[in-house]
Length: 144
Length: 384
Image 1 (cartoon, rainbow over the protein chains, first blue to last red):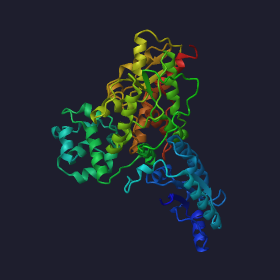
Image 2 (cartoon, each protein chain N blue to C red):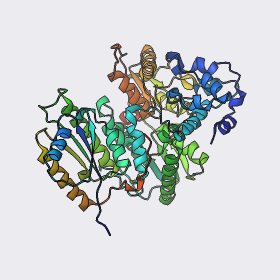
Image 3 (tube, rainbow over the protein chains, first blue to last red):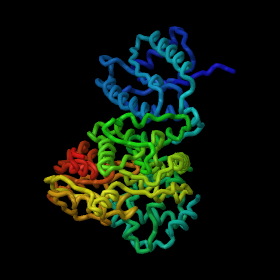
Image 4 (cartoon, rainbow over the protein chains, first blue to last red):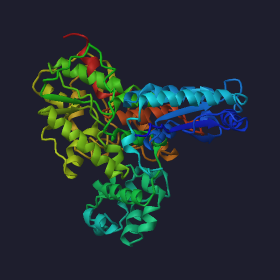
């Protein structure tokens, strides 16, 4: 049987983490191909529902990533994101999801290698955990 | 289900186009583009596309005010619910409050593999028993906890107060660690498939639990169990009771002794408990039996009461906020210090309106919003 390959959705902010992922690519840093990156303009705009829908569509893990506090293009995006993430974490905890399936990262533009390392680490972790408890819901078309 | 079936089911063909529905509709009062009469007219003329792609379909509060005034007994709320189901089938998923996360939660709960951690808040202070005949339905309260933190609303306060009341009357209820969302919100947004899956799970769980009575602190769960489960072919075969009815029963038997609470209060009838199920007297009886509480009735009360402005977490816009502000002003104008309601969602919406004053920086009336069970729990005091 083929080894379980987790699917990861990363919500990455346009200015830092997305650029870091781009840098990882252009500098030929190797990392597992399990991650799907969704670019958003700011980590402060990530809505709890985005993450819930990612799980509904069959993601095994979700990364919510953006700028560091001092790098934000919109002044306080990461602060908003932190507030959202704290609530979201409690929400999915009550739902019965393992806490490790949700990660909050702050990766700056120049940190391509950090991005690669985070993805590597996360894939290893998810391989140990196995498929998400919501994987039974995995459907092609989900209400948008 | 197609448009023709809905028309037959809800007797829409009786419509006289008198427009009474639109004239009493709390949404149409503020939002000139929403009209129940026009929506019915679209349906009767066979314009299915116009109906389905009408974004205003998700503005209806399904509060049953229109159905009560209708001279021909057209069941408009059910018509809207079924039309939303058609809209969902056509890829029109509507507009949701809180970006739809509460509906997403309900859909995620349908997964058979999840092990919820929904009773982590439960402390030793509350006596529960697994062999009890009485089940207390916790509902969405553990999920509301993080979502509504910002508006200083703690849904579990209502749950805890209910448990205190039940314990006070010598009932040690059973709580289900695996219960799922009752499906109210997904049903009223037209997602019947998810609703059925949740209903199947819940009815199976309750049958296995072998209880004789279920007590609800939320009118939406109560309505769903009482009317919607049987209508969709799921039955739980037990007595269902809202906590206000339970309290009224105890007061009638003379078992309740309340402490003095010096407050002027008024009461908001939740549409699910009031117009949907006809429970108007029980909460008033409870309020009337607490010594010191002066009960003041609002201008619109009982069957004539006005909805809190959003239901099933569908569309919540500035018009909804206007409905709320107006209702809060009405409550404050009675001279009451407290607005008592028996629905957690009414409380959420009112508190939200008080926090979000809108662009125009509305001046909010000074009134405290509280659930009936919290007031009763305070009146019971710490003894016994």
